[in-house]
Length: 194
Image (cartoon, helix red, strand yellow):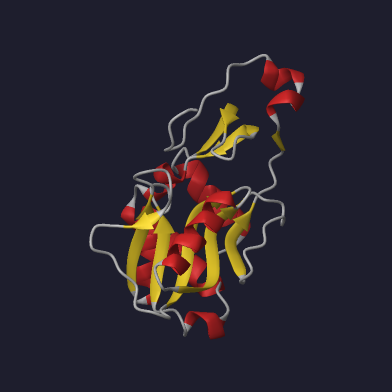
C-alpha cells in the first residue's frame, strides 16, 4: 500500500485532524491522527494491518509467535496484525501507571514478539511496552506501527517498520508557533490530560 493510499484511508474516515493538539508524548502539533477512527471499520483495519504485515521483513515475519500492543491505542491494530500474521494477539495496559500483561495474558519464556503500535512519535510508550514484554519473558524481535511520526528518530533496538512515515512538526510547550499558541490545545488521545 503506497503512502497516498494510506493517507486516503485516514482522510476517508476523518481521522486526519487539524487544530492544536497536545500529543501523549507531551509535545504539541497542528495535526493529529485519530487511529481509532481509521480502525473503526473492520475492513479498513484489516486492509491496513495486512499491508503493514506485508512490509515486515520476511525473516522477521516467519519468527513471530505473538503480537503484543499497548492499550489503548494499539489494541485494534494489534488484533488485526495477529490475524494477518496468524498468531495470537494480546495487549499490555497500565492499571497502576506501568505497563503489564493482565486478563490472563501470558508469554512463554522466549516467545518471539512483534510489538505493534498505532502511532509512534517519541517511542516512549513503545519502549515501556517492550520492557513489560521482556519482564513477562518475551523477546521483542521487531516493532511496527501504522504511522511513524518520529522523523526517523526512534530506536527500539530491533527492526522498526511503519506503514507510513509522516513528519508533521511537533513542538515543546515553550516553543509553540504563534498560530498554535493562539488556540487552546486539546488532547484527543486515549490518555487523560495531566
